[in-house]
Length: 212
Ligand SMILES: [Ca+2]
Ligand SMILES: [Ca+2]
Image (cartoon, rainbow, N blue to C red):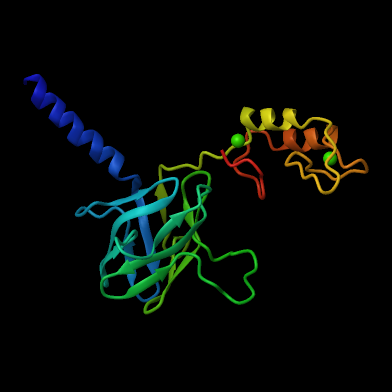
């Protein structure tokens, strides 16, 4: 095999590896009126989760292809923390909302999310097909899993940001990201350090100010 052929094969296979990141086993969501939705179909481009969106096409046995990032409008957005929103487009069934508004759901419980192990959770809503569930334990266990993992973590970058604000007062109108615990002096001190330390190496704690 000459070098050119070898390089060609390498590029083809490496681009294929990059282009999809859904697990070969855990690839199904389920729609109450749509049946199984396959996020890693044997045909087509497959599905890829990136830091900013979900792209590609999934296949549903009863409703056909669903495009996650249509060219002209819509698209499923990832905020970088695995919290999804936006709309996919089904050729036969219209829009599917990945962060549906449900009365009384103040914490976006239904929203489709990717947890810190790459597992999808939550519900999407199709205007013409109703609910789609991304994981269940029974009567049949299924879920969708990706190898994409959020890069947001409480780590040395955060400690550096914190140190830069050490003992600085954050009295109004000055706002400091490191003033986690508003104690009497409203400054950045050991109380705040203790909070930082308690979350060390955690993934994206709620309202964490540093997203990298
Ligand atoms: Ca960080
Ligand atoms: Ca404080």
